[in-house]
Length: 162
Length: 270
Image (cartoon, rainbow over all chains, first blue to last red; front, side, top):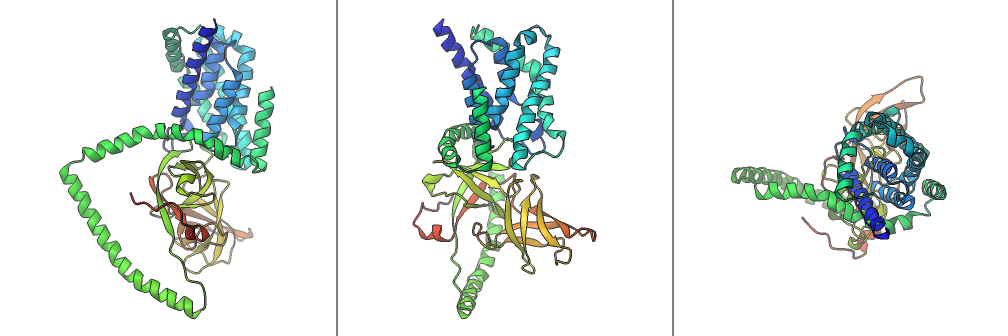
């Protein structure tokens, strides 16, 4: 059992690292608001699938690393991911029963929450977005959800994570 | 819950104090490999383009570069006599001679993916003598200043970040102003310029050196719009940064003032 758990932890960690690298890949300034927020989506997925084994501390650390990478105030993404994880832990049983399109809507709401926290901290610094444009990543994340779901399910079956 | 509270404390400490800066600098070392990894495909493409370039294209490029070099060399010839004249005049005025600045060539390895933060990462760190507050230039003008130094990389805040402002002067008449970042990569705003101030569209803004941070005389931006509304105390002046903030790959870190006097890391050429 312990071995299985360690194996699962390892795969989850690798998926987060891959997402961190993908999130730091530079894209053009015009498309920068369209980048889907991969990390909260991964948090949603792993908590939904393995609520008992997802480590909140690990998610927190991933958030801090993202802050260091992006040069945002330390704790910004950690805090936003805590909000995401909390909502997901409260509702994962319901989410499992939803159809994929229903889940897509749910992802929109949760990533939107993540963006709200993000925008709130930026406004402390005086650099918040002037319009609702900060919700665009939530929209693209929701669009990407079915695809990400499929890929991660493959991965999960492939690595026998239960 | 606890972790959320810790995160909140960290955020507040980070936004309102600079207690966490040394910790950040230490932790930033773990980000260097990530940026290195992200930069890998780009470098691969560069390498392929360089090694698979056709002979005719290389010849063309070579010819163009020779022509450019010739033009610059002509300017440099005059520069020598002008510099000498400048030194003589300064001696007449009993003022200090200007020291030429030493530079370190660096390469951009990362860009902050947060749309609200304008930061870039360069591949030189404290091991190369990079220090906090060091100005960064590209071939066209001033880009920003170093705000976080780790061993092998450094984060640079661009002049267009919403939290950045720098003292400038109009090159034509020497009027001083403060150029503020707006969060838009193509726009700087000049703060508190009265309606009667002589500023025109097309004016070049250069750094004035008043903040003791940026050296004097580097081009910063070009004024693109002056909107004078008699009902308001100040006119709105918009400028466009000279530096290619979203394109430059090779950048220069400048050592000026006391830092230049200390024997630091060797300036290297690409």
